[in-house]
Length: 153
Image (cartoon, rainbow, N blue to C red; front, side, top):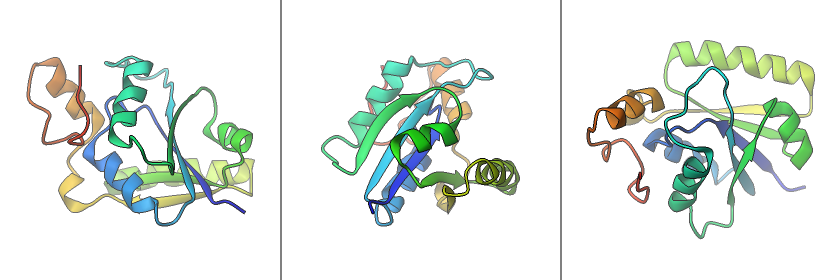
């Protein structure tokens, strides 16, 4: 059986930390869907199409990676495509507490889907999309925080 993982997020924008998690996870999974979701609590700086396009730039030509869009519950999206794993990155202890709660609720909703956590590389710990968005909004240089193949508009 093919090992399929979903890496969900708003990815506004996709960062070096996100790229690192996906790159390291490729050895464990046959297919990784980077699932760009809608979060009603967040005001997106970049459109859905731009975010998908940025991520496609990073993984162009990689048959293991597919960038998709989804709405609703991640667990339902996983079930709809036959994914048995949810991939998540952890930067801090606060991330762990938040992600643990979500993983446990997901497990209660569907026992057949596991959440797999990757610790962020130390050099990526301070990088998050909110900070990168703020730098972009104020005209700063974000090249140190996003994948080299990614060109923001």
